[in-house]
Length: 264
Image (tube, rainbow, N blue to C red; front, side, top):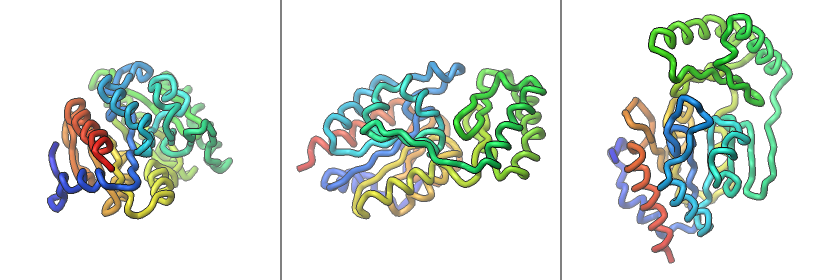
């Protein structure tokens, strides 16, 4: 573990966690709980991580929230605990409650027209095979391509989609292994804000993320909780601490779980 915020006393954080009346643990999936895979439907969670989170959900002392770029339906296939916790999928556009209630936020018809036009454009340029069509966005994955091919593809996609971004109020969001065309006014940070609005100000909160799509969430959490960067290599970030998975991630989650066991 590396402390990035010099004023942070991590032992004090866990001490407060032990005595907290309410605890909230928000987690991204890919790159955090599960290592990246070329086939994204083979990205299974680290076994130790899943067992610790299962204990947390069973003890019901921590509100566990998944906030991911994945579609809810895909997460349910990969992560068996997804049906037992709160899930915000597609960067906060989809919501599945612990009671099984599902909803998807509406977006304007104009935005949907932009996504439809994007699909036609990508088919014309033989790039549709890289696409993951989501309810309100399109992700393009190039993990597994050679460096030269990846450079050509990413440049071509940028050239094709820049006019659509400008004309349809969309944004291009880079992630580890690709880029996503999505609504410009919705992201993981919005899901974090919704969760924070439902808990008391003295709740102990942490958010664990890995890539640039998590940065807004990190910034929102400033002074309100612990922002945790989880990835094998460091990058510039607004997070408070950096964990290298899986060992440091497992250690962090185990310590969180242990604080629950010691709480009164």
